[in-house]
Image (cartoon, rainbow over all chains, first blue to last red; front, side, top):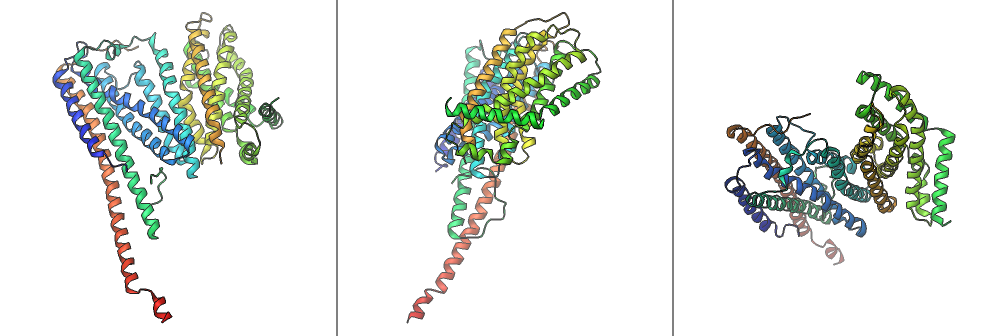
Amino acid sequence: MYGKGLRTLSIATVATLALALSLVFFYAPLDADQGFVQKIFYLHVPLAIVALLGFIVGGVFAILHLRSGDRRWDAYSYVSIHMSVIFGVAVLLTGSIWAKASWGHWWVWDEPTLVSFLIVFLLYATYYPFRYAIEDRDRQARYASVFAVTAGAFVPLNFLAVRLAESLVHPRVFATTNGGLPGSMMLAFLASLAAVALLWVTLVKLELTAKSASGQLKRLRRALDAPAAGGASRVAPEVS
Amino acid sequence: MTPSRTAFAAILAKDLRSELRTLQSLPAMALFAVTTFVVFRFGLDRTALSGSLASGVLWATLLFAAVLGVNRLFVAEREEGGFDAIRLAPIDRTALFAAKAAALLVYLLVLELVVVPVFALFFLGSAAGLGPLIAVLVLADLGLAATGTLISSMAVHSRARDLLTPLVLLPLVVPLIIAAAGASEPLLAVGGPGYHRFGGWLAVLGLYDLVFLLVGYAVFDFLLED
Amino acid sequence: MLPLATPALPLDEAGKYVAAAYVVFMVLLVVYVAIMAAKLQRIERELRDLAAFAEARAAADQATPGREEVDAR
């Protein structure tokens, strides 16, 4: 039962989001260097952290799938990666807006975290064409898990390499963002992080519930010997 | 020798012999690389390269030539049922991964043996940086071999595998290119080879190689399951 | 080489960028919800069709009950 607890989770998410937004706009002080623009940081960075953790979680589910053969883990892996890619779009868009507001350019190569994230995003974007190019369902699930594991191992390596490439040439302008945050900012940041993390979990659960419902429908249809539905058989992994 | 090592040696020998006989991949890769140099000469409108530009042209070209090799890596297995043979044999299946990666490594090294001197001829003022460049090339090739073999085997059963392989491979090798180019840039500088952060970049390359060799070793079995 | 971060934007201009970022987030979220809503609609429609199908079949079974009984007698 995937839908169980979804309501509580949603309420918790909304509450934390409201709290976080209040802290960000009414409690956290104005940044001395960047002024009001710094407020984007409370949205952009938690989205990035949660997306990256989501990719790693997808890799962990993939390992569980490979070891047990239980296709449910594959569905969890797929949805985790899918949700993190969507969050990734938000990361890149908010990052770009932040760059424009701070540097005057819609993209900067000087911010290693943003660049690393772009590379990770580009990799996981290939997850879909890769998956759907394999027709055999079992094989698709297995190979997708291998992809998720490989990509998960790649994430930290990538960040290391990009960080090294930038660190000595360009001083990190946003170095203040994580180290040395005053207490009030840290509180707002942590609340935002919690809110975004809860949002991710809620949406993943929502997606899984919808998939599960579709799966039960198929099952029912089969049991009743009813004619197949109009839509083409979906390629994305099913949950039943 | 243990059965696995015999299998490894056998597969590697078969691949190298086959390539020697048919010359399917290597000449194409080398020709592609040299032609790409010409394209860069005109695309950048330069006849001499140094530093970051030289490093970039060299690594981009090597990478795309490598992709050609990667695409063809499992052709024989796919067409002649080599996968079934491995599945049935009572050996550690990762022997196939090791053998293919080793074969790809050999192809890349031979490729560079031909192509890097041509690059120096075309664009470099002096060959002084080429010696230490060998270390960078070897480490980078190891990483390319590991990742390339892994991705190639993942794509072998898919439709549009020739498109999928470079698509998935390219983002994965970005850290490798960052490190390789980072190490090569000072080596190819105008005033003579420099070693700015050379050790650091080699360490990153080594780490990359280790990670992907381990990952390949760990997951390859699952790719061969029926 | 880019200069270090340009001096902080005045509040009214900065406000627009901050708002833009949060709007992007909201839009993505709402689009996702809309897609989920469409999925839910489809599931509802299929369930309705299946229910009708099952009912029709149950009714048909009732209309022609155990023909074998009639023949055996």
